[in-house]
Length: 428
Image 1 (tube, rainbow, N blue to C red):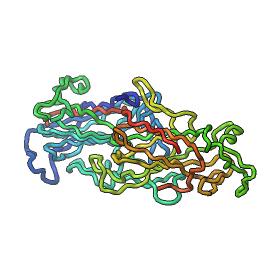
Image 2: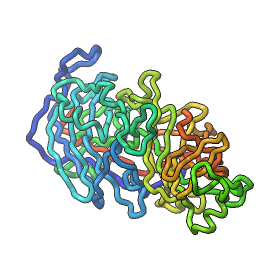
Image 3: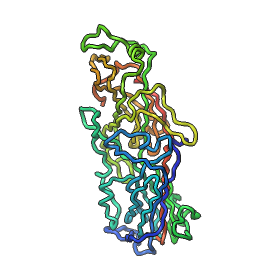
Image 4: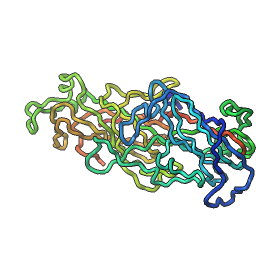
């Protein structure tokens, strides 16, 4: 499959450390796990070298392509609140906190912990909630309450005024790396800090054993990406309808969209956001849907100017989608259809009447709907980009409302490439 952005590895390398945790002491029993088995100190650190770019808070501002590592200069966002969770026979042990990967700076955080040689699984989390991370007890068995993986209500000023709408999920990273399936590799390092250059192989019996280096593979996005561009048709019969007029209730001077655009020289409607129906409100700690509650998510547009042509995935090794109207994270969705309500603002300076007889005033907001259906791929999938190209064929379809171990160096590689998902062409 083609990748969507320039590949960039975030490398967690181990140096030296002095802060000690007992990673095998637990506050509750783990049946079948010998907590008194062979174990020694583990020194954990991390490095990331990439051009810096400050991340945005997704709940409070429009998401850009840069926020999703989908920009044209290859920069990546800081990955905050990284945690590794060692596991033995499915039992979670104490978490190892690794702090933040700061783009553009080689930052080393030193941590010393103790790991059972029988460790056969690691879970890695990135961009976890700040409050939870700060309050995490590294002397306790790893856990995360569902409330921390629940999205908050949107605070966008342009969100729909009727009903409750939520912000997109954060750009979580996650992997569940099993030794039995070679989800991590092991090595014997010779010098401190040689984690990246050590000679790795698959773990014997799927366990860390007495090796002193561990590389955890396959850390990717735990959510999907929705990228959308919207353009307007100028040659359809609907585009020729006389529906735009200067005075409320007086349609004597009505003109068509074609005439309006020709006279004004630009497409005078702003695409201001999208409502994504049916998003899971809460994740489990393995980033599956928690319960049955789904909610509408409002994603504000990053670029309000409508497109002149359909968007495409960029070609070549650094493939991505540039200059879209909307970028948003999305919870994975394996259902048959997803309803999107694209939000517009009437910037024509004129009134217009919908097919249902509703008048939209200048600067008023309205919605056009598009339904996307499952193909051979899920509509939204973790680590995949769904590209939606919307074409407005009739402004009259508008609606005023939303239709509703051993001494071991542990490290990870994070793949910041998106994989190509489905491309949808929809008319509205």
